[in-house]
Amino acid sequence: MSAIEKLFSFEGKVIIITGAAGAIGSTAGHLFASLGANVVISDLNGEGAIKVAAEIEKKSGKKTLGIKTDATNEADLENLVKTTIDKFGKISGLINNVGWGANTPIWESNSEKMVKSYLLNTVGSYNLTKMCMPYLEKEPNASVVFSGSMVGVSPSPEFIEYSTAKAGLMNMVRSMAVVSGPKVRFNTVLIGSVDNGDSTLAAGYTPEMLKALSDMFVMKRRGAPIEIAYGMMFLMSDAAQWITGIDLRIDGGGSYKSKMPTNKD
Image (cartoon, rainbow, N blue to C red; front, side):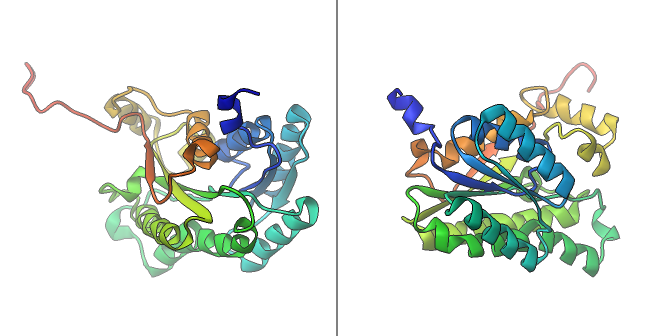
């Protein structure tokens, strides 16, 4: 194995991925298993989690666990940690990938919707991370990666609940990082618009909105799940041993529109 291959080897690692029956989480699961990790696929969709785990195990040959978990239910999170330890004996890394938010204009939300979004997108990740910390602290180069969103750093009145929760998540991760070094590293992947299949449409995006998004990006297209998984993999690898508390933007260069006049102006 070359020096570069060693940097990105996850042989002997045990990594929990939440929200892993979806496009980004399942893709990350396949990637980490292909690099040697034993992966735990956790999702509210229990059948989906078990199916993805079986597919990963068949393709990679690595023992993989699929388990139903409600990220807003502390008993479910405790069961996730216990089941992982019972099966694999350790937790080397955690990807808090759970996150979702519907299209809700800024003045059409309410207390219940705001709190529910915060519980799902922020509090659940806090609780699971806290439960994993006693095990993570025992592992070399232990790392936690969170799925953030560009809506958490830019005005997003169309997704006020989700964007507010993701903004809170980012600050929470920075706080975790400063008190946990050098034992455990914490970083956020700031995700731009990614082709998540049906879940993108379920969140309220229309084909017209998606076309407009693609045209805005510097790279002139939306991202693919594997491109997000690559960022997660880097942040958890030995190549990133001195990186903690950062927000890694994976957003196709962001949006840009020239301020120079055109013939149409």
